[in-house]
Image (cartoon, rainbow, N blue to C red):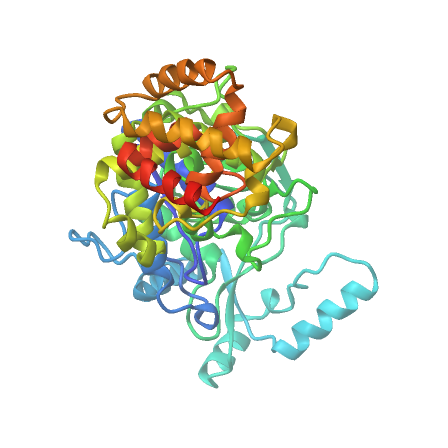
Length: 490
């Protein structure tokens, strides 16, 4: 048996964080078992469709390396992946359920159903259909059909039965049939509801494992009833826990804060996003925290998914992101940076392209230990891509570092100019450091008395990369020019 998993979203907006985790778990499980992962679109609720959302979703999934084996509009087109293109299929199976007396026509008006729900709510009763149309005679049903009365088709739930299924995460679940609502399967517009379409599609697409978030657990008994009614083999179910913010509130798709695209736009690396999301509810039974995609595939086990909710903490995501910024290969990271800039900050991308790659890589190599996200690169390197200005004299003086007057600043800059002017470009920061320490010692000054004003003069900022790193990046000629210009103003 080939393992097949699926992601079946509604095209209603963007890919959110908990959808990403659902996709990731489906993807990891399929790949772990040498299976297939497919995407289909549940677009039967025509009132909620958002144009372009399917294309956006596929683009986002590709951006985080979760590329399905089958998807809408793929080159192979094994079958329609949009439920709106499968209506004839659903009508066939609805008729089969009616013929087997496993479903029935319901002619109740929306007004009657609203009134019924309000009455139940006023009595603090569960809101369920009262089965009024379930007991219509064949003659009454045919008469209403012949009169073209608007109707739906509802699931017929067996009486006095325990519906059971095994969940890989939650264990064995038993639900008395009296607690299960007789769900609408086909709406008045002849579009199926999620419940019918989901079961039919999973069966016809050979889905073996249904991995979805916990809020679908109450619906699963209805699906089990349909599988039994069709005499189909049921897939294995796994309902993964909800995600909460750190304040224990549920993540809401109404806020842009949960959009995966937002995190990509804020330049979180795919490596960190996938690594962190994988650990939200899954315990790899190790103290390790950092895993590549291949390592996640190798280690992933649905039985290690927690039953309780997990907390999505942006600060933890930043922690993972800073780790990958520090540890990824520099050339790979530089190409990533250019890709992000070309997509999200074209003006800055064009600017850094006017500089040599070696220069840009030097900057990235120094700054990556000081930033947590790519969008911090620009604000922390602005002075390295623009003509320097004369720094505020107050910044040059720092009494904590025993720089109490301009004369001390002048002496410090003269030492730095002498070094940069009389040496070839340095091959490493250690080489810069060794020469500076030697000359500062000869001048009978403290290291920080020279390095503080040198750093401020080169960066014209209160906070920046340290002086030695700046000289290594800027090269000696440029460093000499900037330092000399500042010294002249003093």
